[in-house]
Image (cartoon, rainbow, N blue to C red; front, side):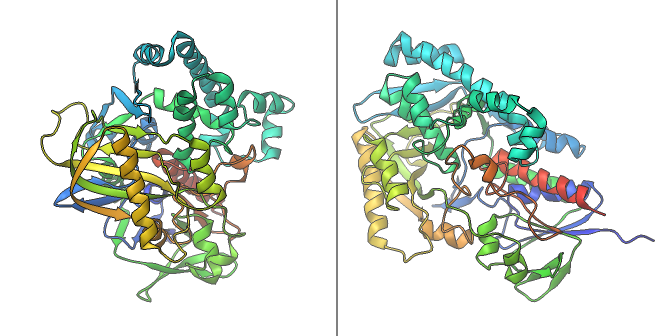
Length: 490
């Protein structure tokens, strides 16, 4: 009787769970080891004053990625997860008191922009979305749903047409330069430039290709009953239904093997043999010697770091500003903000602040009394250096000042801060960077780490590898890791 192949997945983040599902469907006996007490990875949950928060990603797009994952496993995504389309995508506020809402309805957004900045800027936005759609069409296959491309593979696929494609995806200009040509109103430049932070990057360094994010959001933003954490639980449930053994509270200490990966040793000393090992992390985890010498040899080195964050899960009474579910309060000086983050590796003195009012989903009455507010400012990925409590206090005070300037007054009853040092401890080898290497320069997408490592049998998954950061992309990376492992099997 032929021995059943075995796979061990280290980490029950979205990429690891997706890889486990597809490997199980491919006939493998799969074990997932996760040192935390539940699934999700960077899809974190926190409980403050008895209230559960989404404390990681809060925006859910690309729903079709999850529909396909469930459908391929013979399951129904809609039966496992209840989602509703958001009508109001986000509310934006500036220091001058101006506000702009973006909507799922394009005509409604165009009218809002016309009232905010004039009809010419509304027409510019329509042209901007049309170009973003072209960019998305060009990159969707090779850069999102396919294996990590190389210059050679792109030339082989497109020949001399590659250079025209590179022009169409606007890869040689920065986002900021492209937005400056498109919009005359600096507030709109700032609004759409912020999309670079979705993958931990700077709009002053990221290629204009990332403007495709505006198109992706326009295709649908969804609200998940129970929060994004419920999505992670549903994928974990799918894995269990496929026979995957989920082992929580188990820390992986080392990848075993010499010329190929042969298993994983746990911190307890137990050894799990495997034909395939998938690590739901990036090269920093391997290069930082967090999984032993075998894994360290499989990584060429730790990549550059993306943004980290300082976050607060706050139970607070909010007054003076009409919060939506997603809210962005912009700083008055965007160049200075990113110069501080990437040029000086410090907190900006006047940050942009994101607030997710998790009890204001547009489908229920506005909460009376204290409500759940997830508050985030971008931070440098220096969480593995000495923590400075005074610096954290000042950063939080600057965030409060930004909110107060927009009229938002908070009476905080309880809160829990998460710092870059906390993220560095939870996600080893990152220094607190949350998105893998930043997407800076026209070659960034080609340079992102591949799911296949130097060591046969060892694969990576998650937002730190191809195709990139974000819940849907991390999930796609796990599926790609599984597909690659299945194709590599002798």
